[in-house]
Length: 248
Image (cartoon, rainbow, N blue to C red):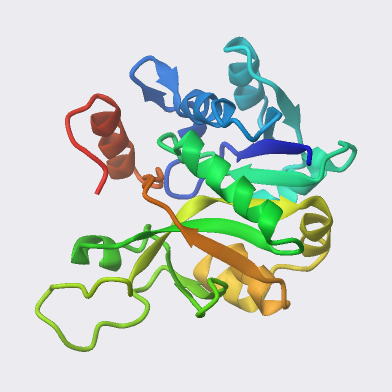
């Protein structure tokens, strides 16, 4: 089953403009993401999909492969759909362009689960063990049903902790890890649908799928990650890569 990974990358981020080109110990953020995705064993090809020539040139300069796409796409999934429209592929991995710590093993785990779950989008979750992460709006939370399919994603704490003293019960709170695996046909179907009300409210593209009856299957992973959404997040990633702290 032919699988490729596509990294959507745009320059005009609202919270941290130009973040794909941010320097992290001598390499751009996008190069860190590209190198980690390239280490995944279940991916045959890695491609950056961008709407900015500066990002395109940066990827080309470090020897990566990039394609130019429209600047009008409302989400990364829409950008990826354009990039793979004429590529003969069965599974498409969306590796978020702001995840420089994404584990190649996590990508392989998601691809393997996708092969076992035909017709569904597949992604990963990791346990939340501290209240700070639960309350962080940049850490997307997810709740699933008894079979591992997503019920909802949110930037808010879900479920809401009504009682307690700061101790989080196990097996209840999970953070979404920033990658998706789509069957190409499902990706095409999804991106023909206009952005949905919940997607626009939470600024989470996966809610478009849930609102339109497309299933999302999740599996827990031990491979945590940390996305870069703010200057503080960028500094945290720099510290992690330098080995000064560890991912929680």
